[in-house]
Image (spheres, rainbow, N blue to C red):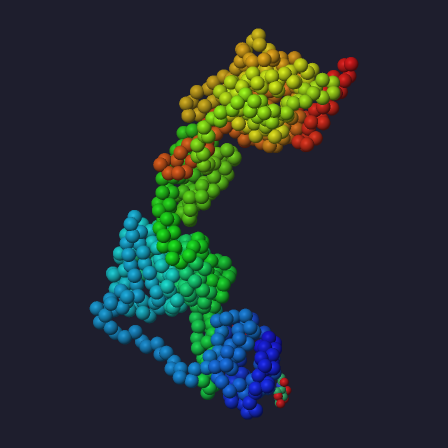
Length: 617
Ligand SMILES: *[C@@H]1O[C@H](CO)[C@@H](O)[C@H](O)[C@H]1NC(C)=O
Ligand SMILES: *[C@@H]1O[C@H](CO)[C@@H](O)[C@H](O)[C@H]1NC(C)=O
């Protein structure tokens, strides 16, 4: 229908200048349409075309266009629009001489060598990286003839390399029968793999392309990296090779999106005229994706300008060369330092397995490696704190004036005194003991003294994300009495193997709240790390009632370890609360005594205290 409309519309423009006699045979359009109908690779797109043609071919006015080239252009755009395919072309070529593909002449060996050397470029790059550029993909017949020479001159030089860059940026021609050959040199002999399916329209048959179990020469080991370079000029068979190896997860494609050509383009003469129809007569359907690169092109795994593709490929290969050492070093660090020894050993072993199974062999950049390693570590351990991290050097300590400290403390802590003399204290981060010590007096004056003389207290940790645990013993101590020391927790430090007791401090700045007055701690699922350790201790010792949600289940603050000499860093929790029955709260969180949604927890806590304290009056 589109074809018809287009022809009619175009005709309108020509009516005024139309010559009254037809310059071209009336059968032209019908003959052309028949060629398309019988040969175009996607017959499903031609539904309805038959009727359009019949109608259009009655309309001979278009044929009165005197100039063949103009008519060919009109017909071209008509057909292209009908099938939505710019690969279909109509041309007018009175002087066209069909290219006859001659049989491969029996050239003497020296001449064959010369031919191969001009069409195949070979190089050995630093780091034992092979480079091979092939601008025309040979078919089976030619490959059979030059095979031994190819193996000898080219392939045997590639085989000992530890990675290969296969440059298809300039490859725009090739023969379908060459696909199984090339692909098979990069796959294993067994099992035979279904590489591609080719539907051939003229014969209306689909052929499966299978990998070959016997080949001349050796295969390139599947454990070695293969990078294919592409450009927007990579076309046809080369696109198929890139797409097949990409989807078999054998190659990483680096460069530009390819042309979106065809596995087979043929040219047909229309009847006795000088018009020709060029169109794709076969199409590839990839068995893995069920789809094709034709028309759309192959999307590279790493998209860069064609001119930058080689340098990018070299970077990828160099990164991949480091991966085994990075994974091994990571596994050792985790096995030797992770807080829970048996989990650490298990994670290390499974990480090594992932590496052995080639799970990291497709990384293309350091960030990608870190993201994958992080995700794997968290999956294997169930610990969100075991991950890769960036090593941001600690900022030099700020020089604060006493006034600035006071301001800082005022915004870091929130206090209030509610009805019935109920104190409220909120802070969202634990500080380091050594950093808190010099300003303890200021905190006592501006924060603690506002709530210390209350009858009961609510400590709000719903937004407390943790921080260092060094100040926890000190903070806990305010809620116990000074006359006897209490063991708050036992902390096992994996790297040193030492278990330390966490004790209340005998001396504190300011006045204690003491052990008698009621205390409620508010939690949410965001309450994490050091805050969980505090909640855990106060719950375990029966010193506080916990109201809110189960806490995050994070861990004691992790330490940062550099992975070898690389720029990769691991965050590894190294300390855990020591219980005889496994993890205390790490990974699982602490359940509240009184469950309440985080945003309702404060009202619940006030209600409990009001009932209790209000009732006493
Ligand atoms: C084409 O023209 C012939 C003869 O003039 C007529 O019989 C036929 O119905 C026409 N076909 C269409 C599709 O218009
Ligand atoms: C192609 O062959 C199938 C059967 O294999 C048949 O159903 C279909 O009609 C044929 N298509 C054409 C265009 O001949």
